[in-house]
Image (cartoon, rainbow, N blue to C red):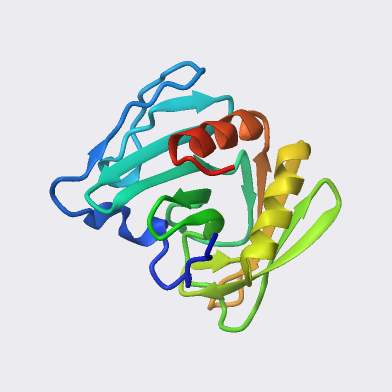
Length: 186
């Protein structure tokens, strides 16, 4: 599998999908609970704290899971949407691409720290999004998320504001299995 260059992450182009893309309601063994998602993309299923999204187009499928923090802390006056996504694409073949959207622009060259049940991972930032450095980093973080219970993400804004977001990993494994089946990624 190849790893995406991270220059055009799903989180930044969901709202600009080309006409002809459609959300597929793929039911592969879980409850289907439609819910609203940013940019009008609907969830095709939810597994506790994680929603599943499948977008099909002429060039293949994009399948991703999405979650928002259960708790956020930091001395900020306002903050945009904050979430994490794990994405598979059928073309180009991409698996487990992790992106974290902060709701603010990250401080340049300041890594984001993700801790899953005590295990730490560092992500690089560009604008308001953070990514693993490579496919091996994505794979290791996803493995930790599949076996973990809680995840904490720490970042620093371009203004120097430190933030801490706490995520539940409840439902992550079931949601991750579903996008694997939908995009035919193991």
